[in-house]
Length: 382
Image (cartoon, rainbow, N blue to C red; front, top):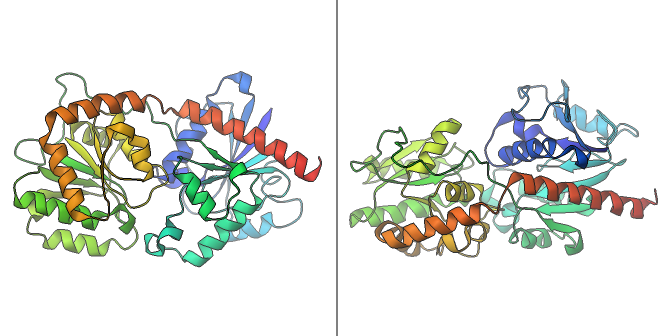
């Protein structure tokens, strides 16, 4: 039996971004065939909130190791010999660091997921102390027996931080079967954002790296020429979001913008299904899960060229220069005005989305766990 220490904490507090990755991957691992002989020891110490087990985990294939100690106390405890996270709160064969916090592990193989290195590419992309984060991530990269990146583009991020290429493995996200196109004649049940019921959609935390300010200027350019429908944004306030919200409130086209901070899964699905297109020329991503979810719902995306979302979208994505407002505006105008291209992109996107499943991600991740264990055995001679 392969006992996996799995840091599930990101899934206990939110289902966006890393939290969704952790939830979906944990669920898929517990649902692998019994022949895989895997058991998840979920590392979940939390003294403030986050007490509810994420739904979907297969009964009998996991254990939630909840605790009441603050993170700093737990961190000190794990530094004590014999009480590292490979032993406490549960003894495991391999420990998976799923976020940018790394519990101390000495007694087990280690695998880390490097979601992206945006904080290196541009320090203003994160609200954290970049130097502290950089030091922490690099230390984990040096210690980890294997490093998972979630797209081919992510290999560059790992190399940028000093990761050795022979220890890096690409394991893409999957997409839940929940995300699917609407049935013929189905109404999405949402109030129409515009008079004609059409809208463009952007989903993502309100923060600089999502490129909202340039998207806004591009949308305004299109609206000046009456070449785009209304714009719906679904995203919670993040780092340095105030400047963008000020620009929204003072925009001459304020009435054409709708910002929704929080939605249910049902509402999220309906927003995807009802959109004419998904506008996501983000400056830096490790993967671009929202692009994949949009594809699975039959909604094509405008994506930044040479980015991970462009890799995810493949030929279904309309690529633009994410740093050029005119290029973004031209992309918006084309995806709105070219019905034939949109239909083709929809078909290609649906086909490509079928290539990404959480079951495949779980199987590949377990294979990385076994590689990490073999590497540790060779390294320490046990």
